[in-house]
Structure formats: C-alpha cells, structure tokens
Image (cartoon, rainbow, N blue to C red; front, side):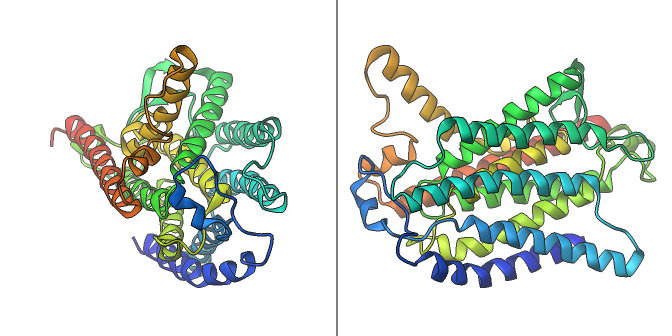
Length: 363
C-alpha cells in the first residue's frame, strides 16, 4: 500500500506543478488548439487554448513510478518489474504518436494531424511490440506478463488465442481503447475525469490481486480464487501513478480548461487502460469498467454506419456528448453527468470482479 500512495502522491505533485509551466510554453503563438467549425458553436471560443497537456500526465506517471522504485531499492533492494516497464513503454509510445499528431495540427494550423496511414503504422508498431514482449518476459516460475488466452477476471481456459492470435487481439484492443478515449476527449475534463475512475479501479484490482496471488500463503478457500498475474503490485503502482497524474492535470483541465490533453494524453491513456486489462487478465471486464468510453465509441460507429446505409443521423453530432450540447445542455452539465456514468460503470466492474472472487472462494 505504501508503494501505491508514494506513486500517486508524487505523480499528483509533479502534474499539478508542471501543467502551469506547460500552459505557459504551449501558449506561445502557433501552439493553440484548432477547433472543429462543424462542432458546437460554444466551443469556438476555445480556439487557441494550449494543447499537448498529456505530456504532464506522462512525465508525472514516470516520476511517480520511478520514485517508488528508488524507495524500494533503498529499503529492500527490489527493482522495477517487466510488467511495469511494458506498461510505461506502451503508454509512452502511444503518447509519442499522439504528440506528433498534436504537433502537426498546431504547426499547420488545422484540425487534422498525422495522416491515417502514419498514425496507424505508429500505433500498430507500439501495440504489436508490446504484445510480443508481454509473452516473452517470464519470471522464475515461468509466468509471463500476458498469456495467450482471452480473460474476464482471469484467463478463460477454453479460449486459447495462441501467440500470434494474442498479439493480433492485443493490438486490436490497444487501438480500440486508445481511439475510444480519444473520442471522449471533447469536453473540458471529460476524458481525464473518466480515466481517473478507470485507473482508480485498476489500482484496487492490482492491489487485490497482489494480496490474493497464488504464490502468497493463503487458506484453502482463498487459494481457490487466487490470481496467476505477474507483478500485480507494480501494475497497481503504475495505475496509481497515472491516476495521480490525471488528477493533477484535471485541476487545470476542468471547465473552463486552461489546457487540453490532446492526442498526447488521450492515446496514451487509452493504451495504458488496454495494457492494464491485458496484464491483469481482465480484458472483457474492461468493457464494463470503462463503459463510458465504450458508449462514446459506439456512438461514432453507429452514426457512421447508419448515415452510410440510410443517409440519416441518429445523433445531432457524434461522439454523443456533443449531441447533448447541441440539445441545449450546458457543457458542465454534460461533463458531470458523464462522470457519474463513468463512476457507476467503474463501480459495477469492480463489483463484478469481487463477486467472481467470492464465487470461487465460497465467501
């Protein structure tokens, strides 16, 4: 628990102090966010707001985790784990793709950054390399960070993907979740606040898996529900560090936002969330935990599919948080209610996770 608190507190402090500096740097002429002209007209006044604020979240996450590593190394000689390095690599890699996308947008003064092909190549390279490496780094017990099985709260034994199949599925999950968070990042504080809910849930899940790991000394009943997850505590620590970074950033990103996270933050957070589900073996459960992101992405898919088929629009605008804005809701009203939906989804997901453990342990 000490490690989790250190990571979260350090990341929070770094993020809340670093973000104002980024606001100053990215407020220089030519660094402001371009706003879609076909979006809600109330958003036009946001033109010129500095973006790429996700940089603060990434730096804070690294600072929080590395501080914990140093403290542990001094106290007991333990160093970083493979699972933590993989999560940091995935998050930073996706964030770098987003940073390039944001940088091109602001330098060319347009709302489109990297072309689709280059963005796809960048995301695919990071995702595929993460999937391959996650199967390779085995500990002394032969347990790797990921396994070639689909998972709910643990591996589903009869759904074997194989090594190649796992890498393909992992890549699809990373692409899907990174784009889902990206779609949600359309209102002040919405994506950051929803991410806090999801990351908080994974902090709890990682710590619970650590306390109930199969290599721990457990009662016979608890052993029946133990978790075969490599490095669950470090998974929780990385999630806590990202959580602290998001909260610190949210201080400046809440309405009225003084800085946007941009694709730098949304792609990084989406990749991290996907990575947490893969390494904690909760891939299918994430659909519930991050239900708001799922709904946002589905609104875009439905809007496009129906328009191509019938030339009509289901929503006034997609992603559907804009639908409510165009229906007359205030931006803060939409944000708070969507936060509540995100919190309920996260709580339901955590409840399902705990219920599964109770069903196996006879609790």
